[in-house]
Image 1 (cartoon, one colour):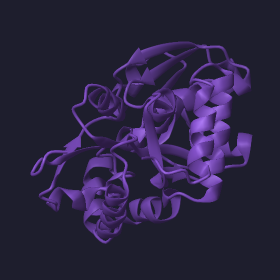
Image 2: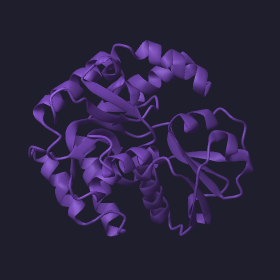
Image 3: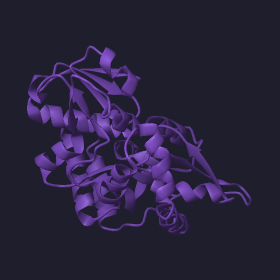
Image 4: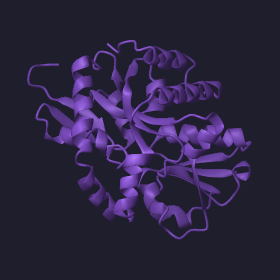
Length: 274
C-alpha cells in the first residue's frame, strides 16, 4: 500500500457486527465503508475494499481469500436475528423468499431445509420486515436488524431461528461472518488493529444499543442481552469446528468448493494468512 493511502475496510452496520469495527471510524489511516454483506463481497472482488467483515460462505468460495481465526460474528444456539418466517412446517415448505443481503444465511437455510426433507423453490428478492405480510411464499428469510424488527410485528408466520436449528443439527456454534480478504492484506499489523478495534468498540456498546433500540423496537435490556450473551465476537475452538462442519455440509451440497474444507483446516491449524 502506498504511503499515506488509507486502508479500505468494508463493514456491515447490523447491530451484531458493529462492536467489531465501530471505533475504526476514528482512525485517520482507515476508510470505513459500510454496506450489505453481499455488496461488500462484490466490492472486494472489484478491488474497491482491501479487507472486509464478510459472510463466511463467500470467503469459502473465493480461491484467494482467507480469514483471521479469532474474530467474527457467531452464535451458539439461538441468534435472534437470522431466520425464516414461515407458515408451514420446515419439511412442508415449497417456496422461500430469500433476502439478497447475506449469502451465508441463504446457504444455511438451504442446509437446514434440505436436512428437514424440503426441496423448495428459492425466490431471490429484496425483502424487508415491512414486506413480510405481503409475501406469498411459504417462508421468508430475513437477517440482521430487519429480522429483529420483523419479530416485533404482528404476523401469521412462525419464526424459525436458523442458528438454533444448526445447533440442533450439529451440536456446534455457527459462524456467520469473519474478517476476510486476500492473503497479502491480512498481516499481523492489521490483525492487531482489528483486535484493538473490538476492545474499543465494545466499550461503546451502551450507545450502540440505545440507537438500535430506536430502529428495531427492542428494549435496551433485550438488546444488551443480545450483544452480551447471544452474539459471539471472539471465536472459540468450537466456533471453528462449527465452521468446518458447515463447510463440509455445504461442499457436499455443492454450495461451496470442496477445496474450502482445506482452507478452514489451514486456518484452524493456525497457518498464517500472509
